[in-house]
Length: 402
Image 1 (cartoon, one colour):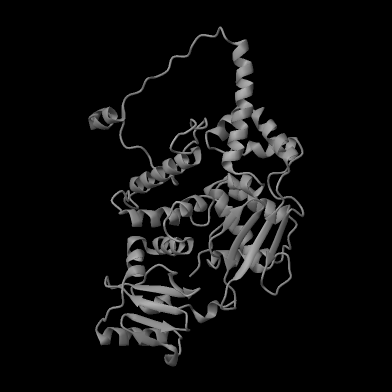
Image 2: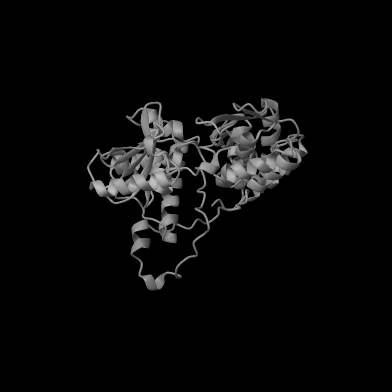
């Protein structure tokens, strides 16, 4: 059963929804159906890029519909006005360079005649379905799911407006550096500020527990590490974006451990860790970097990434596991369960530990006793759902067409 979840858990996500429903001038009669589709989980991965959002959304037809949302990118003059306005607000600029997008930036931009959030006529939804409404229910679903992306990373709004996080921060650093040099010349006689030397990490780790202030509260979401405040030296074996990705990944893993919701994954072998990192990057701006460094073809890396998303190491095992022969009575009972869930008996084929029906859907029994749903796409079998204890749990309800 689909929960009545809301959209917009952060200020930026809520601001997007508000702009969507009150300023973008989309058909208000279509938006509620889109919310329902988004809540039902019908959309695939949402991908954001300069001026464009893409996703697939399941409807009545066997193949999902292709949705594209276009948002007008800023031109160079608009970007110049926005960044100059932000650079002029020391608090907003410092927060931005520290990896935090202060909501006040919206007012900074508006003060110079630029709207960061969608304004009337700027958001153009398109869908491959036969409904010509703007938006259709499939495109409306994706409109709402953009709020989730902004909850995870509000810098995605800059990406939609035409510039990446790194481009924006580099430009802002340049402006602030020029301003700081001017200030330093007028304050050259100021006293030096004492700097806390801190302590080596090993020493801090070895401190007796009694000296520590006690367990710290765990936040509701991982912290967002600040980007490096300067560009790396020429010839450094890493980039600012790569270092930020590494630190962000470490923070997310530490957060899961702190909440007791998972392990650090530090014991994974290279293949599993690559799948884990690819799963985190899938559909985001980091995907090109992760895929570019892999020895696997992008389609195979994405296949493993989705398996990891659905079931972690067990998903990778299910993906690689060769056919085997469970007891016949087990597979006979599984076939009856699938038939009872609404699949025609004549359409179900049993082959070892696999039940295949509809031509492109296959349920596989793993040696761990759990069932996995696979779907054939472009000639390859992809894991498409979390595992279940019973096979009929992985059969699509007939009533979910639409």
